[in-house]
Structures are given as C-alpha cells and as structure tokens.
Image 1 (cartoon, rainbow, N blue to C red):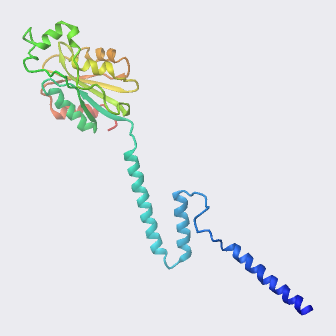
Image 2: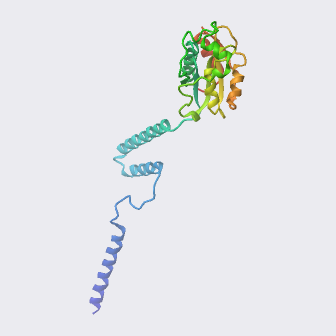
Image 3: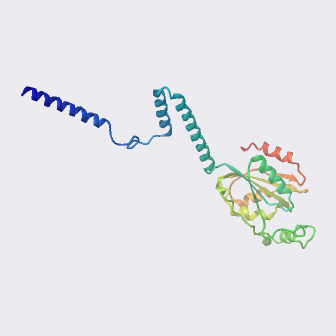
Length: 247
C-alpha cells in the first residue's frame, strides 16, 4: 500500500510540473495582447536583443541604422506635407512690366510665392496713355467711381499661411495704381507684416502706402519704397536683404 501511495504521489508531482510548464508556454502568438510601444522603445528592445545574440550583433545593428534612417525620412516627409506658417507672398499689379520685374527679384531673394493682380479687362497701351485726356486711365482718374477695376482673382489660396506680404504697384497720379485697391479691401491683413513697393518714371512714393493701409484696415504696414523704372536687380536685392526678414 505504501508503495502504491508513493507511486501516486510521484505521478501527481510530474503532472503538476507539466501543468506549470504548459502555463509558461502560451499558445498566444508573440506580440499579441501587448501594450503599444513607441518607435524609440521598439528600437531599444531590438538593441537589447542584439547584444544578447552576440554573433549576429553586426547585422542587427545595421538593420537598426536602416530603421532609424527610414524613420528620419518619413519624419522629413511629414514636415514637408504639413501646412507651413510664416511664408512670404509677393502680390503685384504691373502695367508695363517694370513692377513685375521688381516683384520677381523680391520673390527670388526671399524664396517667396508670387500673385499677380490681373484686370478682367486688361489695360492696353492706349488705355495707359495719361497724356490723352480721353484715355481709360485719364477717365478713371477724373471719376473715382470708374476706378473699381474687376480682377480675375482677389483670393489667394492658403492666404492664412502667409506672414509677410509685399505689395507692388506703379504710381498713377501720385497714388497706387487702383487695380490693387479691390485686393487690399477684400483680404484680411490682420497679423501680417505688409511691405509696399512701387515703380515710377519720376513720381515719388507719396502717400500710396498709407492710403492702402487705410483701405486694408489691418496689418502691420511698413514704410514702403519707390524704385525707378530702370532699377537694377542688385539694388532690389540689397534693399530686400537690408529688411532683415527671415527667408
């Protein structure tokens, strides 16, 4: 009887050990029912395993370097795709091409975007003949109600991302060419730094910037500058760099 009891006890012990051993080897696949880990935690785990495996440490380290590079590339891609603030925009109306030339230099120097103001009914060379009292600009000058020039577009896509806005125009009768008026009146300049610039054969900057600021009703308007019609690219670039703006 004692021998039988001893055999039964031994059998029970073996079965208990087997059960405990089975509990340690779950059928749940590795990785399931685990808490989410950050990329840094995953890499740290791989480094730990690599140090423990010894012989394959070199290959594992190489794999980690590639993984790190991949994450960095994806991170940079995400930054490029994300909306960026603090951008610069150069808005301009050019009647004879002089203001456009200056605007292009400013945009190139600042790495800025360009937005041209285009009248639905463009001005011809005859329209711009201010010496003719019956020309379009002469009639518009005499009658302010005719200065409401319809533009192809006054809305800039992603307007809110632009922190600095340059506004360029020719000088007509001592003020900004009125095709820019509707753009200034339509858009919200609150929170933006606005820098006006103009081109002319002889007229000065005058109060053109102040008058546009009044029409805008907002924004931090800076002192503007007048460029001669034949201004050099170097002079424009020197002026832009002297503003101390971030590019």
